[in-house]
Image 1: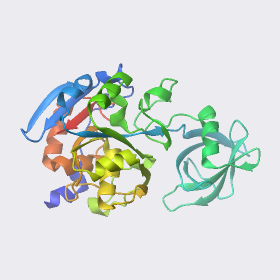
Image 2: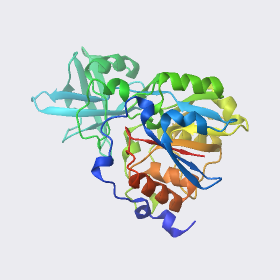
Image 3: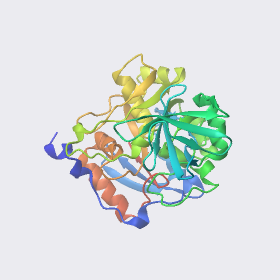
Image 4: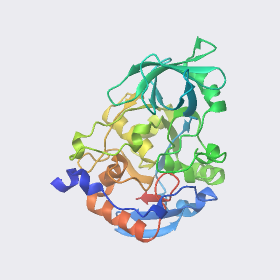
Amino acid sequence: MSNKELLTSSYDFTLPDELIASYPASPRDHAKLLVYDRGTDTITHTFFYNLEQFLPENCALIFNDTKVIKARLFGKKSSGGKIELLINRALNAHDINVYIRGKIQVATEIFFDENLMAKVMKRNEDGSREVHFYQNNKLLRFEDLLPIIDKIGHIPLPPYIQRADEDEDASEYQSVFARQEGAVAAPTASLHFTPTQHERICKNHKHAYITLHVGSGTFKPVEADIITQHPMHSEYYDISQEAKIILDSDIPILSVGTTSTRTIEFYARHKNQTKGEANLFLYPNNKPLRVHHLLTNFHLPKSTLLMLVASFVGLEKTQELYAEAIKEKYRFYSYGDAMLIL
């Protein structure tokens, strides 16, 4: 691998603001689809509703069935000062890792609707906090918190979607096969499937579900000059028995999204660990061992997700594909268009 592939600056690019998608394509499967075939080194421009024409016959699809929670909460301190809190992840039943805007001391209490209260227990070096949630002075377990925030919380749209969440986002920023609550960001390649298309593909292809609860670390740009010095965030994963059977076989895998890819590849390196914390960083010198094909969106500059794409096709080809997508006015990021790497 050349030194160039290790430099964070190699993964930078300029994106015109108008190519950042603020809303999803409607219907979902009318997003554009760039298909890159490594075997023939060809690019095809099409639409997501044509995906099935390009799926290799003998591949199995792995989907991430995580469900986005309403993780953004607006509350007040006892002094009346307004507070915005973003749930990042549950560390265990009671300790919840969160991000809070502004200066908040340990032991501060934050009050929300539905008699919900958060107490700051600890401040971490990365600026996040650990809190306990209470309702009517009763300490809540994470699973008891979920129905409450579903009433009063907001869908945590990514920071580059510069608008408040709207009612439609509760369903649009969620895959049609989302089941397991716990993510604070959507596995975005999954957002393009309509119920009909998903059902049809599942009838014609082997498939299975894994769960990776996407954390807000997924948006964190790499700040180190050398990519291998980036401290990779970890996320909770759980591999179903059906998925394990496929992963343990030799059938070619098409991974739906970078989150499924990180989970599959973490498992490929840690056999028999079907649940736990995954913190795998894929880049050109740490290539996929088990995933053959990748369906993904277009990602942020200097992001670990862009480096993951480069682990499949190399830095130069990644730069070329992104330049082509910009030239053809593809829409980028979470609500944007998709790319299939064969």
